[in-house]
Amino acid sequence: MSSQVEVEQNKQPVIQCDSVYKIFGENAKKMLQSSKGEVDAKTFQDAGCVVGVNNASFEVYKGDLLVVMGLSGSGKSTLLRCISRLTDATAGNIYIDGQDLIAMSNKKLIELRRNKMGMVFQSFALLP
Image (cartoon, rainbow, N blue to C red):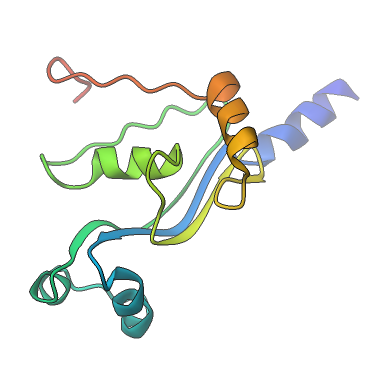
């Protein structure tokens, strides 16, 4: 019976991002709504916005290893900051262990960060 419970727990992602966007600029939310999710970085840039994360969707399950790779300035750290809610996503949904991170109170967010999160920043010798 315990193996059945374990299998069920592994079916739920520990991290889930659904259509996460982070756009910097005064009109970011309005432009994103009017674009209906079809974000063209050049169009947003011309309007004074910078696209940090563009429609990120993924799930991470217990035991998985996730590596976020990309060129400098491609939004890796911005995505991680959205997942930890050090910065708020412009749009989308983020869940940690099934809990809605966006709707979480500051008190619950502090508890979650204290007990379930950690971040390491390194400038060299990173995983390829």
